Image 1 (cartoon, rainbow, N blue to C red):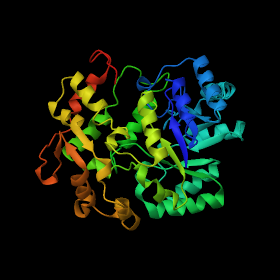
Image 2: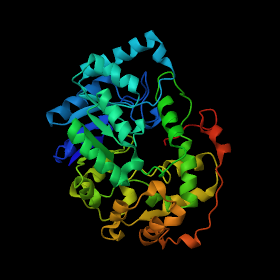
Image 3: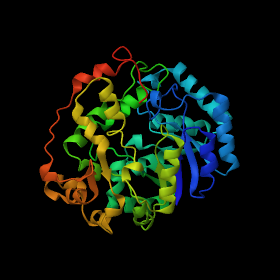
Length: 385
């Protein structure tokens, strides 16, 4: 198993990560950059160049490589601007001089730009590339990437993953899966969220907001149907073996906005391939954390507070529960007709200490889009998300 772990640039994190030989890479970025990246600038640490360089140096001393996230999903059309391209190359040159071993990129233009100047650097196609079929994999491989980070929605599409794993051996690239995002399966807000993350991490982007509003919409879907948490494409520590059996052994742990203790708990669970506790301890779950706090700060509906009381008992999943996805195609079957995740949810979810029952859940919260303008600096005093 190879783990690619988010860093919050706390050097004490590295001191603990070195104890896990599975950890081969860490990844992260500066708060705001020329291109932007895959996390809103206001939620990740604000670090200086010297701290950045020193952190990478320590990682290298432990045999851990550093990948820089330049994974914006848009350059706002500035590809046409030669001056802008020059600035991007200057930024790339500086990052290389600071010690980065490679880049995580979503925009093909940036992949080729880096490849043209640094042919030997490692380049990963980001999950923000939203790669979900064999042809897309082939195209990104042709662009010259070393690793393809699959769209989270592909995590339980074993037929697809098996084909891509086979293709990766022939074409000599790695396949990487994200272990612990709790994004909605088939999320209609995902591309919007990718864009919001990108433009709020650009130096000259949107710099006066403090909350990613698509999370509010996502949280609404989870509030109305908690089964969405089971449909989400996280991977349990106990289920990694099923991916290794088809030839995938590289996995990403997200959470560069998280505290050191949280990141280490997740790494430990996946390195040990077991976790006896609340699965939500391991996944991002912004629906019940960031969203509920932000809604409270703008005096939004109180109904969302129940999301802070949701727990998923990782010990209660049926043995081999994920084998269902080995033979069933979620992409061509309605969740309303299937109901498999509903059955699992009733077995593993509790809310405020009580077992969750789908037929008794009657919350019907509409999307409170009227709150969105309040997530600006002039809408309310900024808080820590």
